[in-house]
Structures are given as C-alpha cells and as structure tokens.
Amino acid sequence: MTGLKLRKTIIEQSRRAGVGHIGSALSVADIVSCLYGKVIKAKTPRDPDRDRFVLSKGHAALALYAAFAERGWITEEQLNTYCGDGSQLGVHPEHCLPGVDFATGSLGQGLSFGTGAALAAKRQKSERRVFVLLSDAECNEGSVWEAIMFAAQHKLNNLFAILDLNGQQAFGYTKDVLNLTPMDERWKAFGWDVHLVDGHDEKAMAEIIEKNSNVGDKPHVLIAKTTFGKGVSYMESQIKWHYSPLNEAEYELAMTELERQS
Image (cartoon, rainbow, N blue to C red):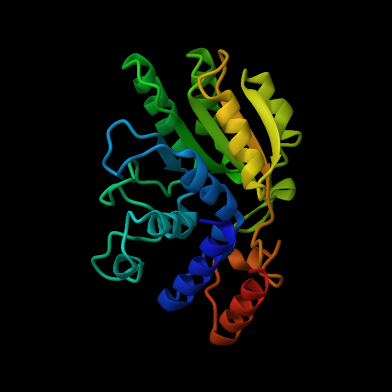
C-alpha cells in the first residue's frame, strides 16, 4: 500500500461516481496509507481487539475505502459501488461498513468519539490504540477543544490525533476564516504531547506513533503538514477542488500526472 496507489483509486472512483471532495482525500492519502499499511493492528475489520480509527473529516472517506480495498477488507466490486444506491460506501463513512465504528461527516465530532474509545480501552486494560484523523478547519469547532481537554484530563496516552494541516476549508483558507496559528502551541497548552511532521512522509509518521504508543501520561497529536490536492498539480492548494467533480479531460490529466510519479 502506498499513498500514490490510494491517489489513483481516489481519482478513478471520483470520476466513475461523478463525486467531489477530491482534494481533501488526496491530502490525507499518505496518512491513511501509513496507518493502514504500517501502523493499525487488526486481524480483520471485525476484530474486537483491533486498533480503532476514526475519520473525523468524513468527506475524505474515499481515501479510507481505497485503503480498505488495498488491505482486502472490501472487494473491487464493492469499491465500484461507491456512492451508488444501496452501497455501504457513502460520501461519508457509515458504521454499516465493517471496520468503521463511527459514522462521521458532521465536522468536529470525531475526536469526541476517539476519546471515548481510548478511555474504554484503558478501563478494559486493553493495549489497543485509537487514531483520529481530523482537519485543521475542524479546530474551529468548540467540541474539538472539549475533547482535547477531556483526553488530557484522563491521560489517554493510547490516543493519537492526526491533524491534517492543509491550510484550507470549503470556502476559504483557514488563516482567513479563523486563524489558529501556532497550532502546536495551542495543543501543548491543553496538555498534549505534540509532534510536527511532514504529512506525506509515511515512514516518519509511523516511527513517531510506534515510539510513543502507550508512553507517558499525555495524549499525542501529530500535526501533519500536507498539501491539499497532493499529487495533481492543478488541484494543489485550490479551493475549487473541495467540492468539484472531475470532467473527462481533468480525469485524464490527473491520471497522467499520477502515472508519471510511479
């Protein structure tokens, strides 16, 4: 599994289904590849002892489905139902799909789910870890900071938040909508163990996670600097690609660029 392979699937399925949210999915492809290719321990998607993952930025679900397909948790035929009638693969993840514990899409909710799952693991004396992938724009939501405080209060060192710091959201750049820089100092002030990392460096992210799992008395956050639309030059850092679907010419150009990166 690689981020590049997930990107190709994201582009192919977006075009087939005629659905947007492409730039957000490309942004997190390397993070999701790192988690499902190198980090998350799970024998099957129904394994009760598996590490948990919450995709708080649910609109990037296509990156998650691409990883499930690479891991063999869904078939190619299932993947090709993405956004079709009766499909388990919606624009946002739903818990009808094995491996998805929490339906997400209303932004700012995923970290609350994750803190509850991490606390449950602690009380069950389980070594399983909980990963929550959220967007920098979600930090505009008060519910995120409530979860941040709760996790620090309960010393949830089995919890990893991964912040997709791509600097933009649906209708503008985060610095213009609600500027929260310096993000690292804010999380530190709320009692978290903070790591700054390149969100396209799978090896670096995996090493930080393995070194810090169940270590110390603080929850962990990887503030992962990413590029929105990563890998497709005309999408990178362009607000348009939060919602817009691809036309045929755009699809062909995107696939040509990704093939050149192989």
